[in-house]
Image (cartoon, rainbow, N blue to C red; front, side, top):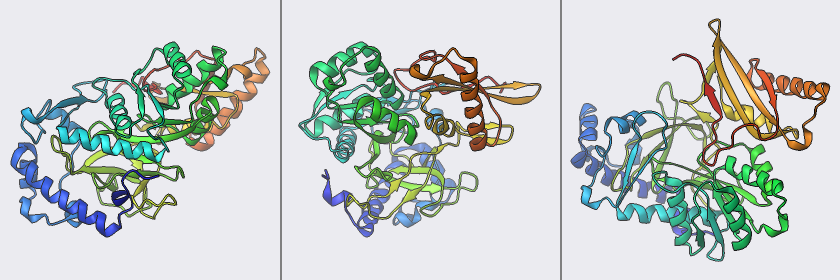
Amino acid sequence: MIWNQDIECASREQMREIQSQRLVKMLGRVYENVPFYRAKLKEKGIEPGDIKGIDQLKDLPFTLKNDLRDNYPFGLFATPQSEVVRVHASSGTTGKPTVVGYTRNDIDMWSEVVARSLTMAGITKNDIVQVAYGYGLFTGGLGLHYGAEKIGAAVVPISGGNTQKQLQLMVDFGSTVIACTPSYAAYLGESIRKEGIDPKSIKLRAGVFGAEPWTEQMRIQIEELLGLKAYDIYGLTEVIGPGVSMECEHQNGSHIFEDHFIPEIIDPNTLEILPYGEVGELVFTPASREAMPLLRYRTRDLTRLHAEKCACGRTLVRMEKCLGRTDDMLIIRGVNVFPSQVESVLLKLAETSPHYQLIVSRENNLDALEIKVEIDEQFWSDEVKVLEALRNRIHHNISSVLGISATIRLVEPRSIERSEGKAKRVIDNRKK
């Protein structure tokens, strides 16, 4: 089932024409209405009329997250304040948040791409969608809410947290879809077992998970815990929120809604555009946004793109699961380390739970990595030999993948703090 056949199955030529029209129109708006972009374009000697289409996207300047912070709060808005009907902001933990605005048309477009996303997961007006993403300045809750309502599904807007109530409503309302972070989904699955809830009383058949990196191994665990099919939804506040891309039933990458969000892959060091199939940094130009269009926004997410037609019939470019981020990548003793690498190792082991932490410190001027690994309840043992054998196995597997040694600390079930939002995977104690 496809929500918007004409767009999602358009030819490459048709898509490029849509993108070109929207890019040219967008450039005129930002040049006229956003002093920051007018100055950036003048630096490159570009007038709006110089750009005729998508082939010239490479000539335009990049936008960085710091540019949003430097223009806090509304300096990048391209419409009058009177036309802005909503404001969201990132969940950053340091400094000023990154603020984004939406016109009424932006909200309609956002609802449209989330409706496309949910339809990819087989969700229809007959479903009951329990939205356990946070509501408020975070885009997750309201983004999924509006998209689910657009397709006619019943929405349970419970927001994040309050796990006991989540489980109660899941059973009482017969929720068929859960939307939340993957780490919280795993926690809900654990809680169902802990509370002794009859799995047959849970009607979930699909989960829409995003807002944090997760691996294929974690997908398998969540599907086993909750008895559903787990789908990856991708988005970021700066571009729109959730609904930038989504997996279809074939789960062979996430389809990007490139009529609204023009994707590129660049080499993060040289900034050169890379061809399809090569790993690099993902860049988006949300050309159809009214309140806050961005020129070539560098997401810092590392992935690769594929342009082949999908088995589902869609022709939209697909992105692979993000391999990590260029800005939260850990460099430990000269080696690049991503939390997702550690997660992929741990979740291949039956004895470990999907909860872990990387703790980085500096000892005698050398970086040290400790990985706290939580053991699954059924495998926790008081026998030192059993735990030592498991610790050695994890140590060997981690060293093989990362190329460096790490201290492995096994901890008791449920001892790592659970998050009702994004999981805190990394604690970096090194002096900056």
